[in-house]
Length: 231
Image 1 (spheres, rainbow, N blue to C red):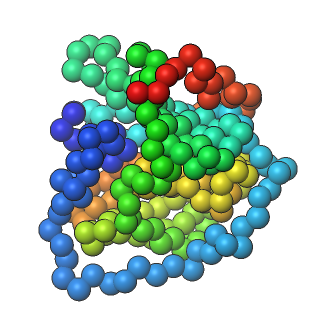
Image 2 (image 1 turned 180 degrees about the horizontal axis):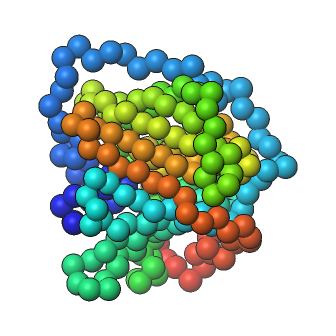
């Protein structure tokens, strides 16, 4: 299980080993990425503004993988809590990170030691590029209409992944126009929250996240680091 973690749980998150993960046989004469997705035209929608928790299942081609993630939407901040099974029965590893859009910083949190480290927002996996085009299709997730986008993700090494995103038409996050968590997972597109995302490598290895529960409410306590100290 640990050797085949999803993109979002790879050890490069904390140890910077993304070069190995992304290393694949390069295709000859890869086509340039093009897109007709124009997030510049998007406007914040206060009527559909969402604060709360969205819970996602994370799967791959390996049916034994049982990873999950909570994305917690707050004022000017988003917290990501990721869960993955350990080596022992009932053992679960938890990783927590906060994207702070007001101060443009990224917190990596250790909930057991009550510590955190800070780095500049957007520095992880620099050089990755996305291109999406709207498919003029709508899909329901949890009975919420989602617009379907399709395109490519390209690494700085030139590797290309096919990607799909399902973007809620009823849940807006007005503090960020676009945000890709760790620069590899679209969480916000055009001020709208992404409820589903799928990627496929050149070898047709698939990973997917899909929302399974949406809980609206106040999330201020999830961003309180007053009992933590910086490492």
